[in-house]
Image 1 (cartoon, one colour):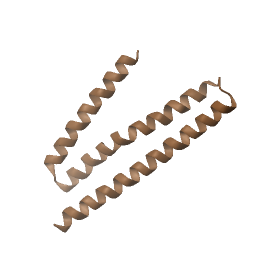
Image 2 (cartoon, helix red, strand yellow):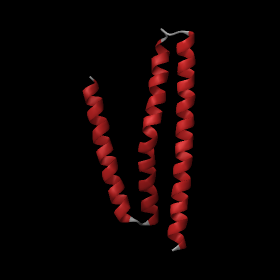
Image 3 (cartoon, helix red, strand yellow):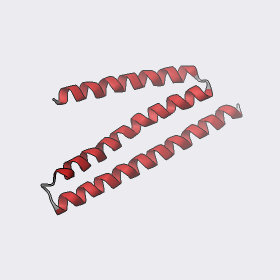
Length: 103
């Protein structure tokens, strides 16, 4: 049973690190975009940086789900791996639908 608890502890550690890095990168990009906006509001790079920061922030939970798939497969927990794959499929359909409607 310690193997399962060790694997779950490893998953929690990886997820925590992923969220910390994702939010830090997003915050840095958003801060640079905001500073650029305050300095020169009409610069085209401003909107690109702000959009990139938001995209990184929104992608972080998706990466968490992908990381969970890898960890569940490593643990041999096929039920949760299958459920997580279904979640990725649903998220992918939602993202693709949103991108298609953006036009």
